Image (cartoon, rainbow, N blue to C red):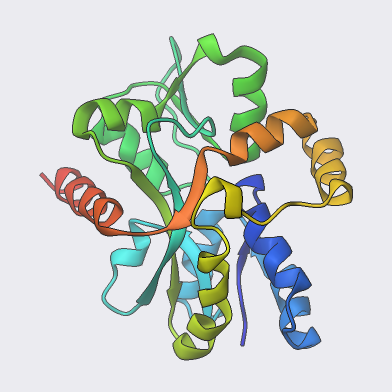
Length: 224
């Protein structure tokens, strides 16, 4: 099974779960080898160079994919999907969902996502608009930024990931990230351990009725 990986802090709990699981070593190695930004994973899955991956939620709507109710979700705030105030309109090349969301929200400015966005936010949040916050103001719903999709080996992926959701239903149940992993991401992303841990409080992974409703509304707004 060829498993794609978004190498962002928001998926640290999933990465650690997979790393510490009893998966065959060849699958773990393929996950590390096939890590990239969302837009490139979208393309890789579409071209069948991957069996499965967490991809942009807008891309996951394609009929060719089977989806699990696992993704990257946030409610009210996300801290890492931003539009820079008083800037010229510019898409983030790493994204698909967030670029479209900026248009839905009628936000004109530079879109910035992922760990680089989180770093900017914690250093100077007054400079940015949190798109999840704006989405909640508009809809009173959470937002699904990405979703686990597969084009092959869907049942195997489902079996592997089902326990992950059970372990992450509430903040108290969430997988704890070891300090050595936090230190690595803190050093490589230039974001403090405390800011990483605070950020992960805003992220959750179980997709339910509200998240699916939000995706449906978002998709319809894109094509109006």
